[in-house]
Length: 278
Image 1 (tube, helix red, strand yellow):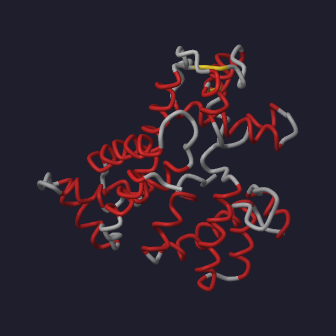
Image 2: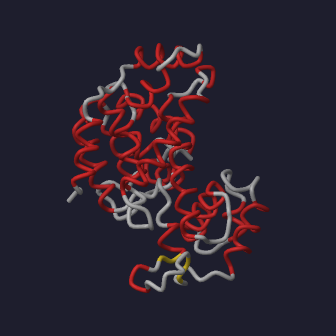
Image 3: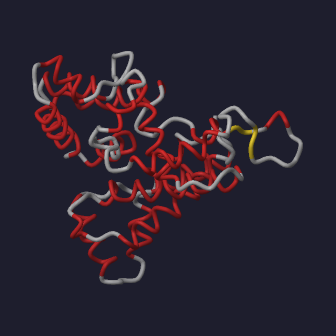
């Protein structure tokens, strides 16, 4: 149950309406032109998105509002740096800055070994892929996502090798009951949704499923692990449906574009799928 401070904050940000695509384009243009207040307006319109992202990092050493505040800092950086010529949606650009800001704050308060959050994220994804490939290092490192980052992966894993994931870190107050571990800080990779996140995403997709075909629905459900015990890779889905990996990717992206046409649906879906593209 949210605290009084959290409830007041959530009530406050609910006053801001979700931007339409046209409103967002005009606002981004105003930010680029340096118009006073434009960046702040762009930020306030996306505060609820930050709340959705911050939710995934709860219980790792910072309060919910502290996480949200760090995410808001990242959102503001994104608003000031975004360029319409990037040919991506603002929120899909901003999610990287939001997560980076939150992850940096978690690592700083944990007082653990200093490794850039993006490299920790890379190694988390590599470990998950390694598990799926039954420990086959060569097969995993040759995957498109990792083949150009082998040295980074090796370097980070070397740094972490001497650190037990269950060893206490970041506390000099003698408070054993509230001691955090490396595992607590790392947590789950954001695009590997926990059970509660999968249930929430399933509800959202169920509510807009009439806009996509049965094959598109099946691909989304398999890819995000909805009504399945796990998430499937593009290759696995292709093998199941007798399609190429690239064909599955195209169908997945097309179905997501259909779902994103509705601004309300897009705002709800982005925290789950913005960074999950293979």
